[in-house]
Image (cartoon, rainbow, N blue to C red):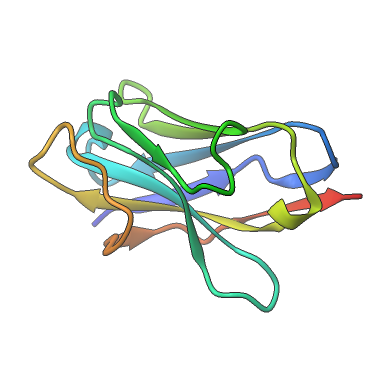
Length: 125
């Protein structure tokens, strides 16, 4: 069983930056493809970013491309989401998600198996 715990959420002004972390346990991080999703108030959960097991392939939602960066440190069992040029519409609960995969290079944007409980990011205008 994989456990995921997000941290780093908080309140930031528009145009500011914030970094999120996701700590994984129960499975070596290098076995997992990792994603970030978010859910804004009153909206459905949406994909934000994905990274392959080896960290060499990443994919982003159009809404965050060029502003957000996903990365991982398999030695520390941590995945990161660096968020820059934040906008009020980025306000959401951000979730870390994982999928066990045999592919070291593929990323996935759905059918994630394991989920964290989320961390709230609020961007004020």
